[in-house]
Image (cartoon, rainbow, N blue to C red):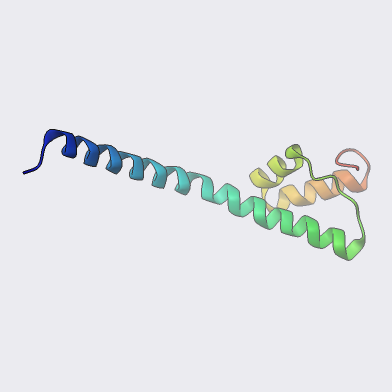
Length: 85
C-alpha cells in the first residue's frame, strides 16, 4: 500500500528532476559558447604567439558572445585596451 509520504517524495523528486532539466537546457548554450570561444582564444594564442589574460570578465564576454566575443577579447588584447597580462 502506498502512503502519503511516498507520494509526496515521488512528487518532490519529479519536481527536482524537471527543474534540473530546465536549468541544464537554459545553461547549455552558454557552456557551449564558452568552450568554443575559449578554444578559439587558445588556438589563436598558440598560432600567433599572443598573450591574453583569461580573467572571469573575459570568460563572461566569451560565454555570452561566443566566437564574436572571443574576437572582441582578442582585439582588445592586441591593441592593449584590456586583457593584457
